[in-house]
Amino acid sequence: MKISHKFVIFSSLGFGMGVIIGVMICAFSATLTYSDGTLYLCSKELIEAVGNPLTAFTIQAFTSGLYGILAMGGSVVYSIEKWSILKCTLIHYLAVIAGFIIMAITMRWFIGKEGLVSLVITLGIMTVVYIVIWIANYLSSKSQLEQINKELDELKALEIKGVTEA
Image 1: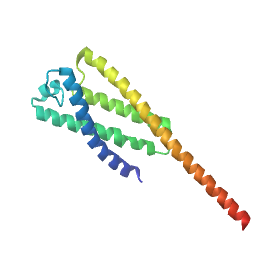
Image 2 (image 1 turned 90 degrees about the horizontal axis):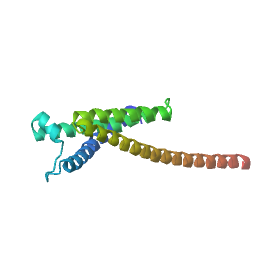
Image 3 (image 1 turned 135 degrees about the horizontal axis):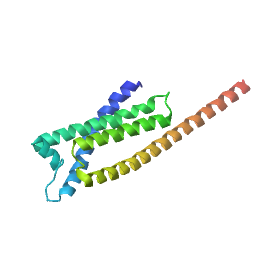
Image 4 (image 1 turned 180 degrees about the horizontal axis):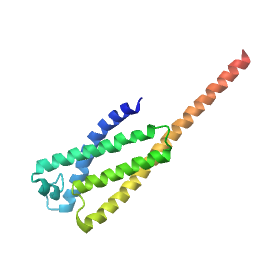
């Protein structure tokens, strides 16, 4: 499959997942942060900045979708065969982290000195999660490659056996 086709498929999935995950995370964190018995689907600061809760929610949902495109669509860098796995990983990781920082600032998720501390903690958690997901994908790919190599070795052995018997 061409990289452009992968990008379109992954980006489409990423947009939907980004919207869903973004809304869930923000609703959970904003509701806990304000602790006033109200369910918040975006930060109060964003609502105040745009002047309307529905507009704020729509902006946040769309922005989360764009971030999903960046994260999922950007994973096609792993399909660039000329690049090393280290280069692909660093480019994707930096894009994901930079995109998150831009989104978090734009959405006013981290405000003030306490917000900066929360942002650093969040980036640390994201880095750990990124590493865990990367290791899981790496081990899965390695296992698949080992299985393919085993099957190729078996085919070679059958071919050699077939040639010597003929």
